[in-house]
Length: 411
Image (tube, rainbow, N blue to C red; front, side, top):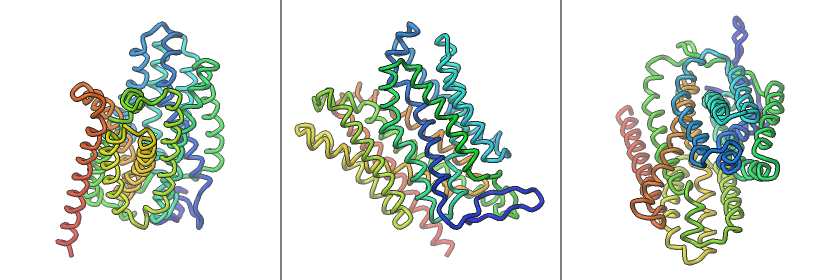
């Protein structure tokens, strides 16, 4: 697929943006939308005490606001992508993002916990549909060689959400009540929708006929690669979240870090992650495989080193910073590879499967971490994460070797 796409004179439909320069403004708007969607998903985690007190519920019950959200995305993202595949992409992203705002507004106005839970389900449905479109959108806007850079720009929205958005939302909730945080998110949705209508390029449904050069055989051949990347996402994100979910507990109990230092540590890790995103966007197109495999090897080494550094808090700070930087770029690599492997006519379905895989990795990683703690204790948790990361490395190596043998047979 090329970066410039000619309009269909008979149907007046476009599948991309005719441009000779990098569409930074449109990508930044998508990054802002991603910032809001990520904050919407994870913000309740830091407001559990306030929400529990407001509705007279236990913290465990309020925690279901996050669990139900993730499960809804896992179950519905791919079917929604299939059902809406003929809807123009810009229309779809606008409708889905508006429903995210509606979910936030419903959260603000919820008179009962049951209504609040229903509002979260609406937001989750919209979140899955939104990501099935937004993850593929940059691929329609730029040349193939600019895809990693474009993905890094949009991924920065998620990174900044972790570094600033969620902590600021939690602070706002602490000061003015948890509903104030979601009120701000609902307002930001309206502002971003205006920007999206104004500046986001129109993208029609992707071509599905052979005139576009994409036949049924090509689509079938792309499927194994799409599924393999989904497996890698589950393993890598699951490994990271198995430790990341309990990172604060590990720092407090094993490293014996002062509670006042934890927010600073989290900010440093988030800032390092944002740096990793930026560096990946710069270097991925030059050394894609070396960057990916080097990142996995580095993550395994850093996770293995972390328990050995507990006697020195400065060493823990350094290793944790490198962990954030290296892992920050890996999702960008995986998303870029997904959009490169998937057939252009099936990128939105691939994006939906990718979204499902990320949520399985997030939820599965948290479950794995809890199980690992029960089996071998909190101190050994980084070793479990390193082991799962090692499984991802082996799977990726086997896949690349298989691809290499196929190419050799063809030649």
